[in-house]
Image (tube, rainbow, N blue to C red; front, top):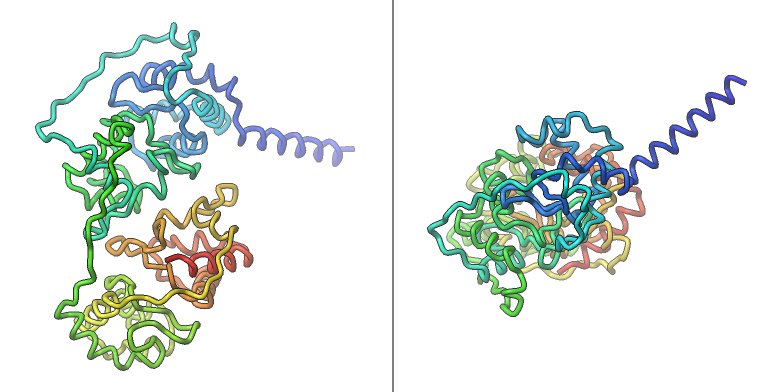
Length: 410
């Protein structure tokens, strides 16, 4: 009898946990009362210093509340606000704000009567921001400075399709600028965003804010990409002479004809040099490459990287995959799988300065082998175990699908 009762308790507990994960907007409405003083009764921030929460992804709101509570996101005001919230509270609050109209048209009269909005404080800025420049940077990034496009993660005009990435549409421009500055000076920590914002100037950030202050005002403006051409530098010329020993496996121009060996053509110079250094040190294990790298100086590695980066890659042998595309762009939040686009970009070109490699055009066989190696922990030279933590959650069919999709990217 005791076993039966215990089983029933476990079943009920499981149901409650599942319910908590979903969140209840009606329950969240009353719990959100304490939020309205700053974030508005309708989820629209009372001043530009506070973010709009109306229509934001519930998963993103929950993630941030958990970060404020744990201290992984530091904010003196939000830490005590989140400290007393349970996971159920966070899920309910996220569900409530997610249900609100992002335009601010839907107002809860009950909440509006409970709080009056503080007076907005607007700082004067000498620089005249350029919304069109902000749009170009948002949609296309700036490869010359290793700034990835934002549209891949945050969607067209800031309407994110990835639930763990925030919507930026209808957000206060000043709040967006504040967060970009925080990522830039690393008072807010997110590895990818720290790299992207770190390469931005204050003017870039102001331009981004200007764009989001009214995206429709520049909807007719076509984003212009900063022209970049692979520069044939002295280092690349020197690297070409030194690359002869690499050609047997990686091809004369870095386009390997043997699928088990990676293409080096078009790969970031910094990434190639890093891998050579780690083959030499043993941080990345490979018996063949350890011997090849042993005699190379860091100058040799830099020159080889420069040469291969200047070469044009040939198309990969992938056939594409719908499952692979979904995982690449959206990940799987239920399994804790981060979307690949966050680091490797919308076109699979990665980010050089951040250490994220090009995956587009690579062979299916090589991509599969590396994902399996990360999954098994046999390759462990990834920064902060990022790839191992993601790959260990992937099933073999996920890896096969991702390899097919990434290889087909151009």
